[in-house]
Image (cartoon, rainbow, N blue to C red; front, side, top):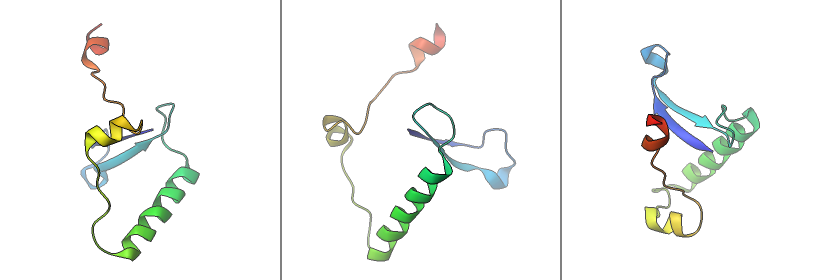
Length: 74
C-alpha cells in the first residue's frame, strides 16, 4: 500500500492524505477502520509514536524506495 499527500481534484477543505491498497486503488474501509483503531490505541498511550530510520525500514522489507521518473518519461 501507500500514502499520497495531495489535493487531487477535491476542494481545498478535502486536502490531505489518501491511503492506497496494494493494487493502487483506494484502501478498503476494513483497512481504514483497522488503521484508525491502531492510531487511537497509540494515542491512548500518549507520547510520540515510535520512529525508525528509513534505512532500518528498508532493511527489514517495510519500505521500498523507487524512482518513478524513468517509467513516467517512457
